[in-house]
Figure (tube, helix red, strand yellow):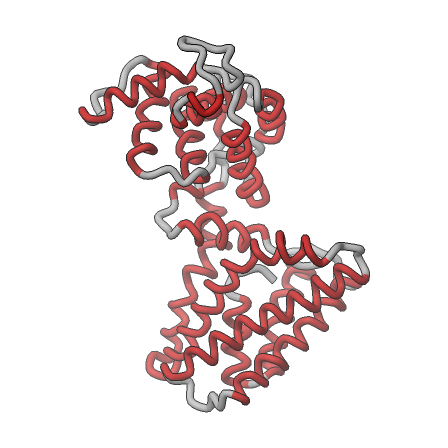
Length: 341
């Protein structure tokens, strides 16, 4: 089950009505995936593993709440509720992924914990925190308390797919596509706001030799510098100065990858898919382009590709006004989903 409100609802059900209610919530998500969405077949070994994980999860959660004597869901119960929710999620992962994945599918436990659990954890914590807050607010607010869960339920399932639908990079010209990719790369690379602003103006200047009168006076020099040296090659064989590797300003290296990416996918170009474009970028990594920035391009694509509706979609996560841990980790996991076929 993905971090789309399922962990929160299961925690609330266990807290108010016991483990049977929590199991029913878990099963609702799983059955919907198999019978309605038809993401997985109905009867599989993975389905049995999921069922076992749900059962153990709700029993452990209910046990923690009993041990901590959570009888009235008031603010003093926040710590117990949150602990129970996190442990429920971890037990579910342990049974359905560690035991099933290692004993039946042949995975090694180390990579499952290091890669899969670590990517899930931000979404789990957000989901459980919202479920904890909702459970405590039900008594004073009634059904209105569930408004707390609206962002985590509606954003992955309704808002983001609607925003992403039918937005292809092929609709953009080279300056716009270069600016879009530069912004997405800057987000992955955690560049500060001013450097992102310089990149946005440099992407325009690179292709049009004009900033359209929008650039700030104190940014003019850096904008022109970034555009001027975007033609440098990472191996030092480019121009105009023959700079090499880390001697090339980071904005220039980011702009070089964004420009190369746009020239493969934007409107008046070959209009390749992102998967095809990434192959070309990776072939140029270490010679023409900075491998670290190319890897950031791969992260942009692989994070958003599972729920995109276009082969050459316009990256959008960097545009969302959300904390980075939610934008880059929690939401992508919720959108991509998890589970067993």
